Length: 276
Image 1 (cartoon, rainbow, N blue to C red):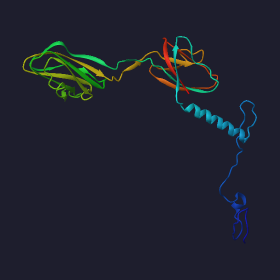
Image 2 (cartoon, one colour):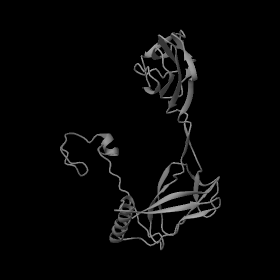
Image 3 (cartoon, rainbow, N blue to C red):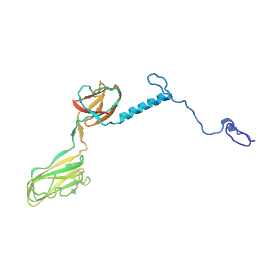
Image 4 (tube, rainbow, N blue to C red):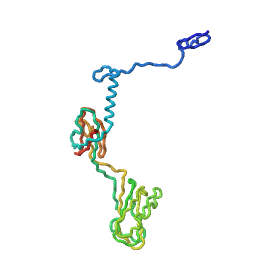
């Protein structure tokens, strides 16, 4: 027989199936949850929609103000001592800052090597230098200082095969046929600066008196040394403070009525820029 079941217009013939009598028509399930309630943080009273929107607008304005750098910074130089020193006084409103620890003492970036000492006499023929370890460097520069001219001088660079131990020429005639008294410079870059490097000095004709020095640069183990500044509250110390390493900077924001202190192992000056 034809009929209706629940609120859906379902036309059917015959008796109602037993599973529909107990489970109903299977389909989408909709769950309704109570809405979130916004409360004032101080009074604990609920906020209406207008009050919520006003709070969202105010917070958005603060966020935009803190993220936007104005037309100028307000720079200051702050001396930091070995006891907690005030860096930022409490403000009546949130403010953004850039703090730079500019004390940079860079060590280990370059290494000077004497390849051939002064007054070395290069006889006719080829003279090999000692092996130079360059595995920790990115590039090399060489200086040829001729104090006693003679025959024709050619200086080649060689790199060592790590398997056979043989030497392969990586660059030819570094100084371009320098044969007169004077000082000559060659930057070979990173070509041949692999693990071990050496020079081959070849003289054709009379002996030549000269020296060759090298500068190895961009050491991978280079460090930036200098006093570290530690940031925190009025009781900040060298153990619990937030470190700002020498040569680095930190961008941060302070809430209203929040001071900032700093301390260092040795006295130094930091640069503080207040975002306007």
